[in-house]
Image (cartoon, rainbow, N blue to C red; front, side, top):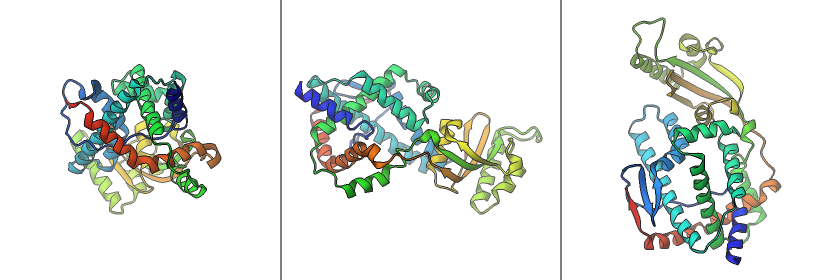
Length: 333
């Protein structure tokens, strides 16, 4: 009972901290929706796909043609996600063996925090993303519980490095404060050119020729072309007359995939052309990002302390995972 209580205290102090680092080397093969089995616990392709979703969107924006570089980075990211999920299952096996528990309210609070960070507090968009990945909310509860177990076990085994100094806390806070901001208050200025799949003014236009047009426009912009002039000439949406400029747009008013692409790229980076829906291609360029308010260090001190502790203990934790893998039964499908 004492050990279980210690685990819960460790968990409470580490709700927003990431878990494990990958190191498995085998390459999985997709069969019947199962990516791997670790100590009898299944890791499904849907689970991998859901976690990989934001990464896939970012890579699509970075490599709009989705060529060899896109495929290589996507494969690397997919393997990393799968390895993290497998490591998590091994830790859960250890957690269950000591009879510890994670309270339901802790799981729900963490999900609320995830919705606030990734979907600007919009639960409808979060559930829509679950639906697209064929994951039920019940299953996502289980996945979140698994993640929290990993955090608790890490804190239990490796929460005794030297305490963080004030200088270390300030340095780590400056690295992470943007990630801890109130994303629902984010705003952005960006330019956009929209090229539909068909063109009522050109009966010979095809989706292929429109894609070629979008590619050419993006190339012109990257080579110094005037975005506003190109938008007024080619864009077919309500902002074309303004040179494609949209100002002070709230993050929560954007689709999750659009906001992810816009807020993860540096200012003045040309994004696209990307096809975010069935209607056509978008070329975008961020001109200004306005972050939501950052929390003060005192408000997130416990989280920052835990991040510092995790970084100090990462080498020891990896050794612990290596021991678990050595004695585990892992089967890739």
